[in-house]
Length: 633
Image 1 (cartoon, rainbow, N blue to C red):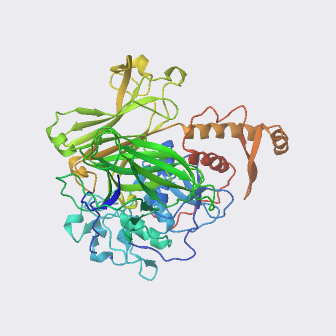
Image 2 (tube, rainbow, N blue to C red; image 1 turned 45 degrees about the horizontal axis):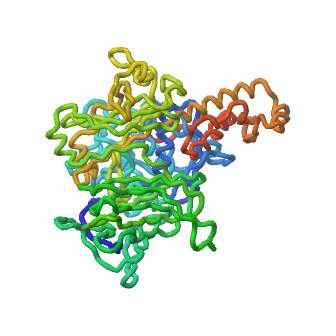
Image 3 (cartoon, rainbow, N blue to C red; image 1 turned 90 degrees about the vertical axis):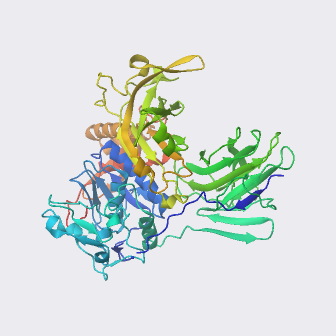
């Protein structure tokens, strides 16, 4: 019968730490209390707001730091579009601490950089031991920006024993603030000269020091043996229990890899026999019921074999059995490569994940293998394209070779597909609107949507990943040379691209990044794993357009109605009081319930809905003045 076994293999390539010694403030009153409260200023660019939300998710995944819209806290981040990208170091000011995400600052790495400043991080090149690793060329620094290169004394900062990190998102690039006479930073070891200043996202050591600074618990991978039939495998958030495990089963013949993964053999037993791999009970940390289960699998059994993914939800601690729900299933033809798989979960109670390998009717010589399992309280990617043997395909394919995803639908009903275009040595990534089922019900053109493109760093531990991400907002200026708006209705301005069940599907222009990544980038970190690359994409809806609509309605109401009148209307169900702030200026904010309703707006990520009230509150808060001394960029 099928059994899960713990196998060694080299599918994992763990990051090797540099043999070197970041700089953050000393623990004390300048640290924040999690969750960190914030408000998003209405003047922020739409793309910046979306990037900030994704940055918050990265902090949640990689640390114990959470963020929440401000209620009435004295200390909170006031994130605005001011002059450039900058932040104060640590928790400094009450009544709103400015953090600026200005023009061209709306990238994930830049937002993480500024938030890390606010959480207490100095620049990496400001470490007290930096002279052992870099040379600062003051003659080449632009006048007035020298303070960004100051070294912080050892009695005013700590590195928590972490090595000097050339890959830190807090490290400036070699030409930062140059006056044009040459590089401002020169690495003692020349091979890191073009490494410093990376702008992917926070590095593994950035995350590690953040967790040390805020005393977050470590997330380790350990294996413990418990008798002959059960192994406990602790992986970050949860523990896997290998149920009915009694045999050690190897991969199919010819596999010459080593490392670790989980394998369930379907080579023996009867049809319907199964083995289960169960996690420990996971408790939800966030208010919204959105989780993403990500893992790799290798299918070497019969096409009738199944890998079922269940969750079992528990009412309370006394509930020992729980309520099972089937969330996903993998079956069909065996694979020649490890395949990435996502399962969107919607647990509302404490739950555990159960992998069930079930033997089918056919003859099998293998089974299912599972590896690199990550669970997060975030949304799964909307679509991804896995390209196996990418380096070989890039070298041998004709220029402009296109690889398309299947037709997808956005949350609000727009049909689209994603294209990866091979053009050695570059790889482009694009999105294309398609005709679809709901076209006659949609608003055209499809504007103010955020398009998120990502090349996945396949490092097993998600806390150590440094993926590449680029984003943009769909706007009216994105027009082809022939004058066609990329976001217009494909049925009217597009061309036939394929047939689907006797339906002619029309496609609009491709819009995206011609040089999203190049071969040199692909060969770094773990963008290529087993020869495969993963390109992911999210098509975000008009949430912030909804927020701005709410703001407009609220402003009109506040101009013409007095508080007592609104309170009277609230008893009739027309308005819901949100908050009354007792700051320098008092006012009442209201969220209109009728006739404007969110019921007709298809929004899947309920976490972001909480930001609506946060943005509305911004109208009621008065600034206590801009205090910009000692800020860092």
